[in-house]
Image 1 (spheres, rainbow, N blue to C red):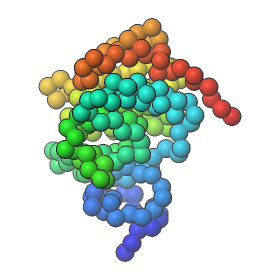
Image 2 (image 1 turned 90 degrees about the vertical axis):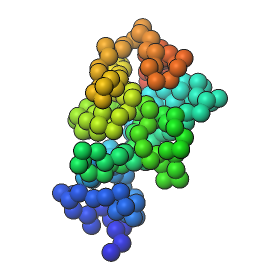
Image 3 (image 1 turned 30 degrees about the horizontal axis):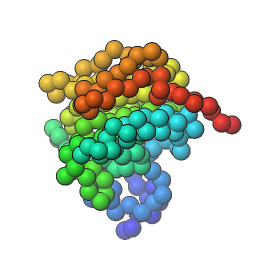
Image 4 (image 1 turned 135 degrees about the vertical axis):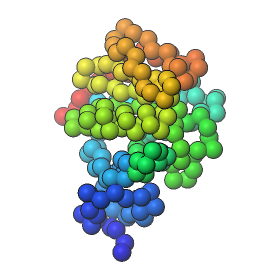
Length: 197
């Protein structure tokens, strides 16, 4: 049976990537450990501004390197590990340095850097569910951006476990552990943060 509407699926059931790829509905979803999770509605203008600010700075340093930068919606197919169900996520931003992982349908494998920007209602997903998935998948560097607090929290993978770095705020400069030569003034992430009514 062709799946054309999300309500045709049982959200309490685990699905596979093959099934995910066959769905024809418009709603944006992710597959976390095999289970469907609805994506937040269209991000706010502030969320988009933060994403654009980070994207612009990453793009300028990566434009002459082999690493590739992608923005949501962009599917990332993470490996199934330790009996955990299949996972397809759409990070706000991700950097992939092994270009053999980049396929027509998205990234098949683990990105080197993943950046998630918190929105109202998605803190648990980003700080618990995705944190665990990204750690298990071997993401080397994971950023979580807190827009209302204007804080950047970074987690670096050491011996297969995420190690939190100190929170970075206005006046701080974060130097990436994964992207050589990339230093980010944290306040630049939050420039022009005008919320439109």
